Length: 206
Image (cartoon, rainbow, N blue to C red; front, side, top):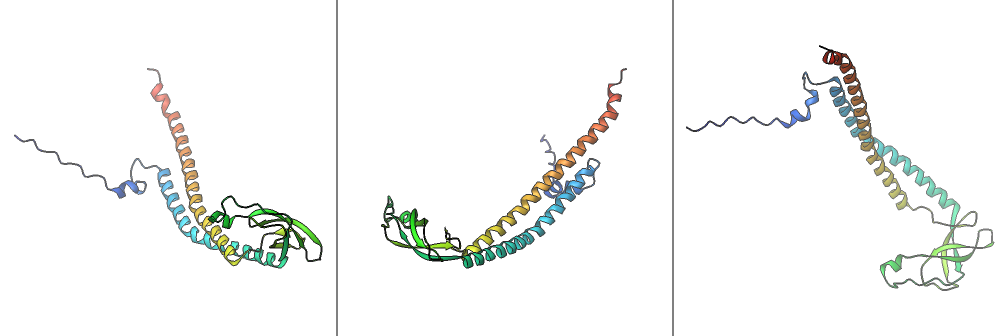
């Protein structure tokens, strides 16, 4: 006689597992429901906060870098400088690295007031003494970087905006973790209180 195969229990549906904190159950604690609401609230805050943070931080960064570029353009100027000594050759002449390599070298130039000055500048390799190069000088006669370009302003603005967008979900995750830890501590405190009231009945002498 063939044995009857017992009916298999259907697997529990995934939504029931994911949303168990929302289902009424004698095992559900108030902290479970509070944790669910915290998750929903933080999720909505993150969704709304990402575009807001990207826009606000991006706009602030753009204004800052644009003003910095304007100030640099007004307080810096380019001038011709002369090399005081030969510049070393690159170990691999003609390579892609050699084309982008720069070496520090001492140069002599005349500032806006007509004073002869010397300073350090980044120049191409293999230049000889007496060669001329273009350098940027500030109002105090110091060699400095050129003013920020429109492309650099845009790239720095985008970088700040992207970092702000990435920071929002990280802050949301950190806030959720902190909330869960607080709820866990409260649960443990309730367990301690309940056990303190129950333990004497379990350990009372017979």
